Image 1 (cartoon, one colour):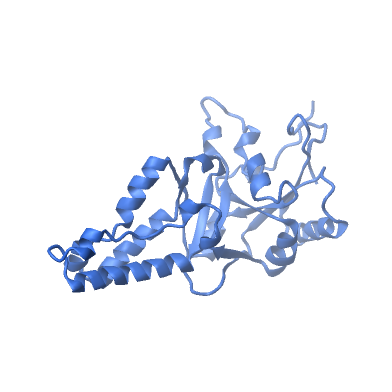
Image 2: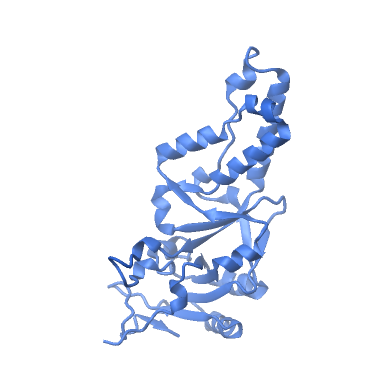
Length: 279
């Protein structure tokens, strides 16, 4: 049986995927050539709403801390809450490198590809009615050079509780030792570690995240020269002819790959029965 190959481009470790709905893709992302970072505080995941911790013993016990110490701790707390409140983020899905081992698995199973994740299509791809955009991670990093970014670390509840509480505990003695501003820079970097953590149940997302801490309502990444492909389900009658035509036009105009996915009760395949086809 003849095989319809998935383009080599999508096998690259450099490729990351962003799921969204069709209207957002056509009318905003592709039309404006930019990605919007949205407020992190609007995330559905309560674990992502991190909070600083000021131990009562540090600011309430006169034998352990002075009024000045308490004021400094509260200032760090104020700055931290402000930074967290301002945080904007956008998330991408990476290919699963664990699925490809040259010694035991020389081929690329479909589970490897970040654009073939059913749960991602369900949760972030508008219930299988959206699109998935493929980007060069290297190009995104260059376009967002001033943004905070990194791979998400997946932890169990007890580990999340332990490291996040310990990391976020404001240390008055340390403030006194290094000074308020130096301590804030240290604490700020701690916040930037915690925002790249999620519960291990999300591990299958293989997420890469970009963050900004601007006080503006939104922030943006210019994606000119970053987009590499457009992927959309094709056997679900939901997309208007206008949207299909627009996606095709953008792909041709930008010279990027376009893949149409055909889902079936038996899953997906890349054989010549056209369950997945290139278009």
